[in-house]
Length: 458
Ligand SMILES: [Zn+2]
Image (cartoon, rainbow, N blue to C red; front, side, top):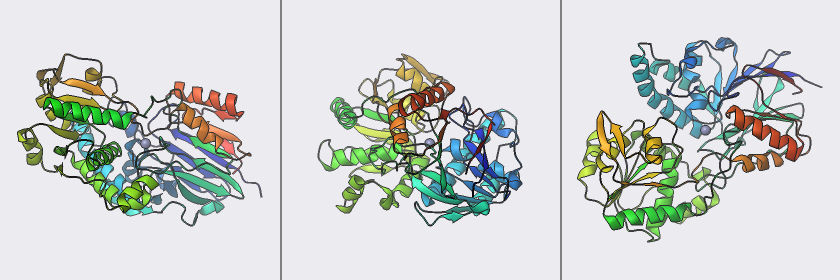
């Protein structure tokens, strides 16, 4: 029997953030969402997040969540506040990290709302209600049967711990939502699973028009920067994202320490969120790649090595500067636009023996970007701070596939693939990737507009 369903791109179309896709089946009335993320820009929670949903949240049966980044989950508590009472499905790790992320974001959103004299977009009660609706399903679980005869399974996306591709099947035809796709091979995570037999793909394109710089020397560069800072007797201060980046760094530093490639100096993870996320990683051994699993099996705790300290409390954080150099401090935010890292930067930027190591993308307007561009002075909490420390940069840390890898990913689809919808990128990146897929693979690849609906044979 031939079915028709309607796919609408309510968010994450022409934009990296705000992922929100609606799949509807006219015959059965089934309404299924994939992701419900924050629109993010200059502000953590842009005002567009306050707008009513373009559908009635109470009419939605099910929401699938690809992964726990806030641009994929940030509006779920609002969806619940506005009437959604269906079931939320994700992997167990995404559920656990998702609760941490939503709770952590409340603080930032509360501050932004207060500054704008507006009520917060969601509150604790909304998060609690959200978690009560949330169920977890491991990768490759027996398919979830939905109204209308859809069967749904989750496959590994290799992007962050628990990240999944959501696979919809009906009457022998398949639609895959990729969520964000990992930069495989990654230090900890398994590789992205191939597409296989599929007719339709809704795929991300954050790096659709760019390739990453080589990451071959990444660990060597990390070793060199640490050794250089130790030799000078300074502090190595690393602004890092709490989710995935911090755990990757710890895994690599663990390896350098355990193999005697760097001396065991004090290493501080100074971010409550990163500490909590690391705990979830620690308990999720089964979901790492062979290499990481082998290290664990050899008896090595990959998130623990001599002189590593997790500083949860504010007092512990403040005491770090009393510990004699050399030392390593890893803290958030990754772009130095808030969090504990700015206190450390205020202290160590004027010190010519110390190093600030940038390992992530620094967006325009952040202090991280100013440092990256060679600022001689920055303002931190109202004070002018001279930049005497070395500013080092290691590229190649990215949790996303680059343009070549995205094309290669589509190559993993069997013959019979009919159409690729390129989403979750800046318009330029989306257009470029769609063009490449058409030119190189001869695939009907298009870039949907925001709120555009398309009928598919599924
Ligand atoms: Zn993501």
